[in-house]
Length: 98
Image 1 (cartoon, rainbow, N blue to C red):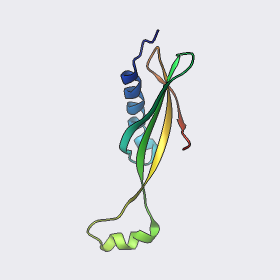
Image 2: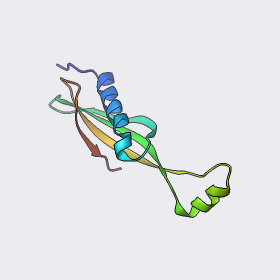
Image 3: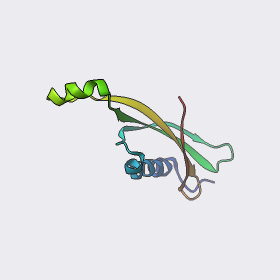
C-alpha cells in the first residue's frame, strides 16, 4: 500500500528542483510534469519534470547590448526523480535522456 499519493510525490520533486536552482546555475522556467511511473515493486514514484533553461548565444550578445529586447534561446532539459512511495522523500535525481 502506498503512503504517498501521486500529487505529493510530484510536489516533492518540484520543490527539490526549485531548491536546487541556485546550485544548478540556471533559472528553471516553464516547469512541467512530463512523465509519471510507479516502480514495479511499488516502492518508488518515478517523476520526470521538464523545464527550459536560457542559452546565451555569444553571437547575439552585441545585438543584445543595442536592443531594447534581448534575445534568449532556451533549451529543454528533463530530470528524473525517484521519490520514496512510503516517505515522500526524493532519493535520487538523474538527467533523463530524451
